[in-house]
Image (cartoon, rainbow, N blue to C red):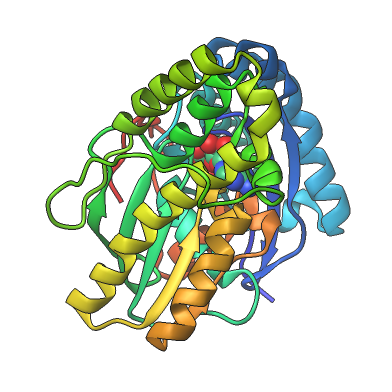
Length: 334
Ligand code: KG4
Ligand code: ZN
């Protein structure tokens, strides 16, 4: 029943550990950092400190609940990047310490590849090739997935990520961080056609989300002149319309990518793939286009170590290990 791998994720504001045995994820322990809420975004210095505080307990819980003894581990995997440098350093250093103590190899994992590979934790698993729309707080990419470890980004944002657009719009409305899930919640009670926003159209399969936050800011400013209670009175319709707008921007590109490549296996991944509007509209579009749709369970949408573990499993099978002098990468192409 080999290999047995412990995986650690610490790229942003989630400290997570997971044990995988022979490709089967045994657990997925996550400590979220509430400390950022009052600042309206992730504060890198605080994220690093919180990882330092949480990592021992998270790793211990993953080992204990797996029922596996440390001496049975075949490798330690960790997120090398992309992410916050100070946050990544905590996971990388911890992995080095354990790998040295146990005298086992280390496996570096690309966080964005891991988001895509979250589809290989449970069934149904997509067959190759497939397209994956990877949408998070830091990235918006359309990835052409040729096999487990061969991926090509065929479209991406040229400025903000779509998760950032959700979070910044929420902040403008006075909602706490992270605003994406709250916009989703209010949107479910509102009319998606109530308001319209303009969009910046990029060439090819690329995206731009920086314009929407300015457009949204001015839209609210103008409405508040007419009615100072505009946001409170219309929050559901505002959220529903904004969400519909962002989802439409994403799905237009996915449809074009499918037409250009002829690929009809379509997946979504990353934190924003938890969005109920995106999931619903993707299903509807998929039915119309005859696509096979793959949507990860909620637990594996936002940052987690189970996805790092699955990526590490495939790298282990290829003998793809890294040396002990490995350093994190804040930017790391797929
Ligand atoms: O993948 P992730 O956990 O971390 C990064 O790697 O960035 O994604 C976090 C992002 C945040 O921007 C958060 O607001 C967004 O995912 N998010 C959502 C939802 N759940 C999380 N956005 C919209 N609707 C949701 N339900
Ligand atoms: Zn992520």
